Length: 456
Image 1 (cartoon, rainbow, N blue to C red):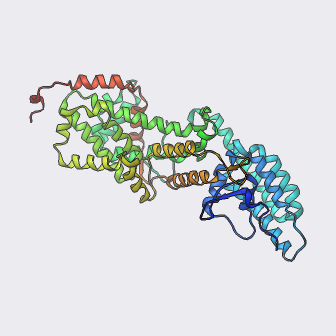
Image 2 (cartoon, one colour):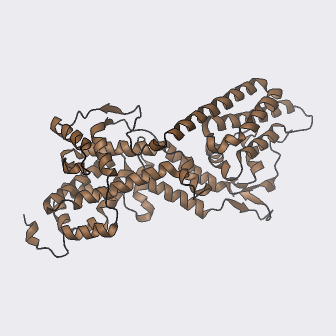
Image 3 (tube, helix red, strand yellow):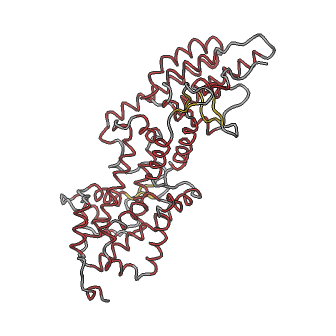
């Protein structure tokens, strides 16, 4: 009977359990198109997410074409087996186009794809040829149109300066805000003053509402990140356009950290300063309730920074409250970096969507996998031949699959006035110099302070 693969055992490297650790590109293509069995979902995702890292899209089409024209001796059942292999080839291309096609990276393969569809496929599987031709034209046309729009609106991409417009969000002119506060927010946002926070105090807004709106804002950025950006460090660490959306989210989180610090240090009165810290503890606690770990980490980072953590007298007032002390301990326990963020990872493992993971952990995990595992490996059987280190890409695909799982919008009410206010505060000229922040911290609470100042 016709063997379902033409590659030799010397073209793959297996572990003791028979799982593929490494393989030649030809062997990987054949595994994707076996007539009798299909690779599992993880293998397929690993292949489609990462194949551009070890072969070009044009090379993939060539290898699929060779697989399509597999020759075999005249034996019983050959026709059915050949048809199944060709159908697998068609299905791989169809899946690629429908779910994993990247315009910028894959467009050079349009010509060879169309040639395969109009010639090879048309001669052998005409009913599938028409389907593939239509899919190629539709995909390229749609993606080209999207690319034109993005190019003509670069000032709006990514939308780090705009609200989330997901259909899962309900827009509202701030039904939960009192009319005077709503009017003050709008007045602050339309004034020429560089500091709207001088017009309206953050404490006038319910901390739960701030947690919700920050969650919507950061979740919107997270959902916009294409999975290919997480692999960009492997492809090109110097191309700034490769990680546009990731950098937008990092910038937003960084601004949040420093803004939180400024809201605390801008308050000269020690008791009012303690109230600001309590406010952010409440915001963090509700972020935990919303499974928003990214904003939670930013709050924890700010409260744990040297300029804020050293405010011992202020913290003494804060921690007199058992309620706030318990909240703080809970959030700190989840955000603890001990044992490679073991507590956080446990929470994330049990989380369900919607959930906003901490972006920094994903970036660290992917960097660790990338730098700790070479792209190719060598077999002791054929030491002079390079094998794609597919085990590396299996591990990377598991991380990407988890990211994709959580790229789901929250169904929370979007309050535009509050979001515009928060965006204005996050995008104003915030002090980011750690030494200057520490100096300001020393100014509001010198190292030696008369304890009578905080006496109740």
